[in-house]
Length: 130
Image 1 (tube, rainbow, N blue to C red):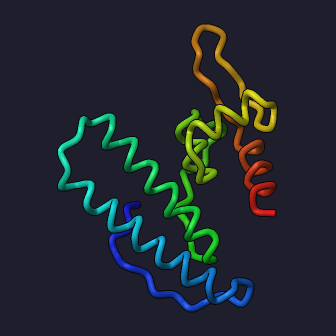
Image 2: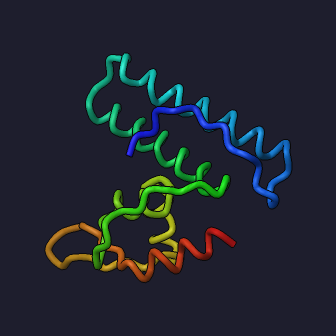
């Protein structure tokens, strides 16, 4: 899901007016950067990195504004990048939380791939909301 429209949403009662205005302005600014990214000449891996960074920020803002956010398809486990999208944070945050023990992963014996259980991601998501 790549949003393309500028949002104008009413303020939820739990947000201050200045916070709401700041979030809407930031959403529209990040959306503009995401759309301008299509016109830039970048290496494919850099384009993907910027797209993920902008989309994760948009998901976090939508969550703060109380709007719907994309839900990934239901699976038993997610890889690092998919877990980051599920939580709305960067992959570096997921790896840092794994190293500190805040987020638990399962590693395959034969490779360095990390797999995160859905229950673990829901637990961390609830902790991030509070």
